[in-house]
Image (cartoon, rainbow, N blue to C red; front, side):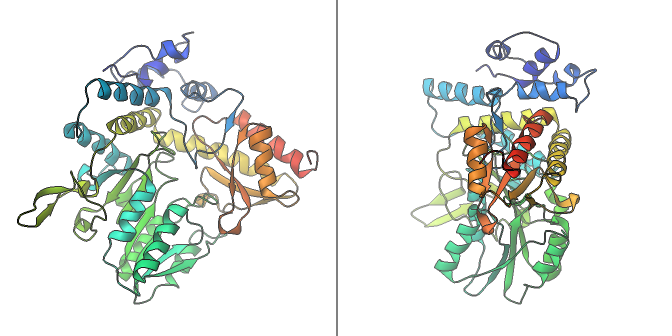
Length: 435
């Protein structure tokens, strides 16, 4: 199978080639051409990011600000999924190539931490599945407590309430401190009792983009003898990570947001020493290392593969690998700097507009590339509808936690011109020039 390669596309475009998108991706090539193609180009220049944006199907008159909801996949990923799907229909293969599977998990591991091992990684369908593995797989009893925030995504809230209704666990919540990031550690600490077993929060919240102080929360959890899990749906692919330095026990994410991978892909991390503590909630072929129906025995796989099961759509995970290659080629440090620069530009612009209330954190250290605001004079759903439907600026409304705001996500296909256009439209709304 010929694999369309983002690296060649970027090299060709950087060199000023006037090929159409289809022609750019017409040939296969080996990797490692990217760094050479960037010689003389400033990594954070508008030209650099223009080349990146050209790798996507996004229309030129459409400003996409909702990566926090769903990322757009680049051509290389789309082509990989299409080509692999075709090949698997020509030559159907029950099961999947385990050598390739471990290669993909090796790349996933390095996204999570330079020292993370592939044996600690499981390929899942989304962050929600990883969250469910934690919430339902830990040995919790009636009355045991889990601490979380009121700003969590449904992918965590619903699994928590589901187990509460089924097994009688207790959910304790705190309202995030938007003035002091470290204040959240104090709020969590105030909720801990002898019955507390787990702290489970988002790394970056889906509501306001607040970054919780992961290392400090982990230290608190360890001091109290608690498990600590992070929902990383908004952080993986958005910034460089190191789950080993965070010292969290579990970390779940989706591949189809900031990693720009195929839809319905995810990655789940679990510390090696907790594999036997966290029981799989669904098991099947590939979960085991041997079973016998006559003896009624089951030996689970000694790695995080025990959380995987049954027939997989290999094309999706080959596409996920391509997405990781794509993001690594750009460089996650560059991605994070780019995204944060745009987010801070937007944040400063909002501060100049009357009738705007910024809902994201006041401390820049705990702000991310997701910024949320509301207009005091226009209903939030009306603002969202106007921007998305009338002006082709895809934003996300935030009804969670009764915030009633509008969330903007900045990623590799966004630029300063888009931010300026968005601010101009918000200014019109604020000054009553639209409704």
